[in-house]
Image 1 (cartoon, one colour):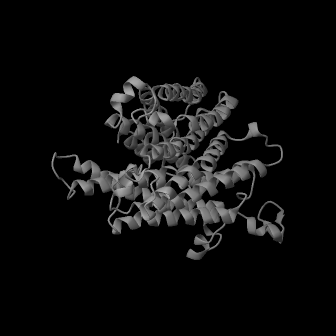
Image 2 (tube, rainbow, N blue to C red; image 1 turned 90 degrees about the horizontal axis):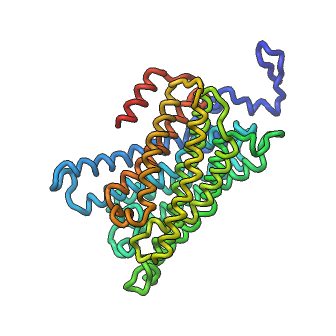
Image 3 (cartoon, rainbow, N blue to C red; image 1 turned 45 degrees about the vertical axis):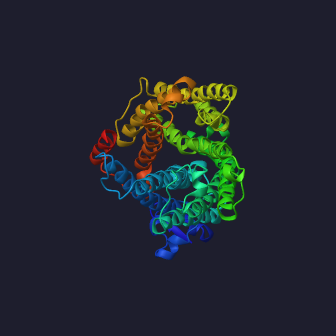
Length: 443
């Protein structure tokens, strides 16, 4: 039996192992980290892994931008090499960084603490999810050695069924990453349902948890679709079945339907947790209770559900009927309503608040500005008459990056700064944090 100095409180032997005053040093050695079941340590492992993937994806982005300096070849040997850089940048940033980042890092770390639980519902499943992520990442990195992939991050058929690059290897990596995503979503869903502290009803949960809950729904429902699609692509490439290749009697548009049925909801896997972080930051650093709690909570669920019925707006130029395109266009405008509700309530929370311009709050303000641009450009792309001309242009690239990097990544960094003392037991330098935030915004 151990006593806590100065308190007169004693810890029973069976509870001594849960003394979490310093999880970073609770057990030493590399093995204790690699086989840990502690949700906080797993979050740190994800932070290290995802940061490494982000660095690799950023290198490919830099190579792509350097190639644009001159009309001819600048840093790449051929157009095919450029296509490989472009593809690896998109695939790594999407599947290895943006999709898992906030749930895997901040969700893993703070979710159990926010609901009063000692850990997630299935700690071993949590560790398995991490190692599946590592395995999937290794398959992506391995393609670099064997010639890369040049299909674009969407793996569009029929090119992906005929190219000589290692599509099957990268597809297998994405398939494994899908299992990691599903298991994480399942773990979070069960944890929120079954392990909330007594007295914590649904509408007493922090709004970050509502974002994670809505995200988990998408991960569980949508991810199997892309898994099956990649499996069919693998079967077609290896066995020659005519599923997507028109030369073999397949339909390439079917691949697009399958792909975007997953890939539009997965946009909200990236952004919904970031919106949850925004709700926390705006309230805390405005020193006010969040305005419209229930509206923000239900809007997260609405976004998750609406996200499953708007995939067709990616296919306005893909032989889709005029009627279906019109329906998808209307649904696309509908999904903007719950997003607008969130933005309105964040602004209302800040109104007449005692705002502290700390580093996390600077990132929150940055999120509002960049997400506003990303959302408004999305309305142009949801309109049939403009999307027909803007499809496959830099306008699409800008919209996607404002929404994903300018929102998801910004929310992740803001959340890390906010929970930094909880994660590492020390304060960051506020001056350098603000300078970094300003430089990030300028960049």
